[in-house]
Amino acid sequence: MTKDAEFLRSYPQVRVSLEGHCDERGSTEYNLGLGQRRAEAAKNFLISLGIATNRVDTTSWGKERPFCADHNEACWTQNRRAHFVMAQ
Image (spheres, helix red, strand yellow):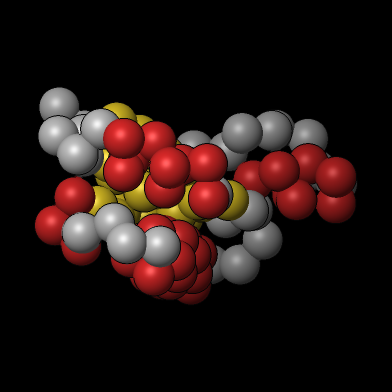
C-alpha cells in the first residue's frame, strides 16, 4: 500500500475509493461491518502516509462481490481485502 500512497502523492488530483470485501462466512450484516472496518483501516494507513482524508472514500461490499468463488481457505483469503478504485 505504500506504492499506492506514492502514486497518490505524485498525482494530487486523483481521488480513490477503498472497497472493503470479506469472505462468504458470517452474516451479511457482520460482513458489511467487517468490510467497512477493513476499508477504514486502509484509509487510515494512507492518511498516516500523508494522503489527505478528503481524497479517500470508503465503502463495504461485505461478501457480495467475491474475487474467488471456490469454497476453501485459499479462496477465502483472496476475498478478504481492501480494493482500490480510482474515483471520477
